[in-house]
Image (cartoon, rainbow, N blue to C red):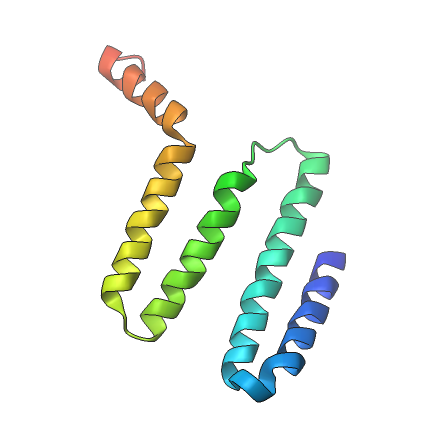
Length: 112
């Protein structure tokens, strides 16, 4: 609940501060940032009750890349959006390379 209130305050503050400069995009930016804050706060809170394996070195860049990809798609920049998708794959494969190698090894040896 507190994460939602903090997210709403961030959203309103960003929207009010940037609305004159960026118009409706200020609301979009405020919403994106507020949802990112809510997600990160809920991951932190959930981890207090349940130990979830999280890696912010992967999660935060992935959120930024997906957000950038959404903006590129909004402006109909499909080439750049495709590049962002490839970048997202690189981030995930680099971050989870050990787990991917273990899965592939199990598949190869028939252990799955």
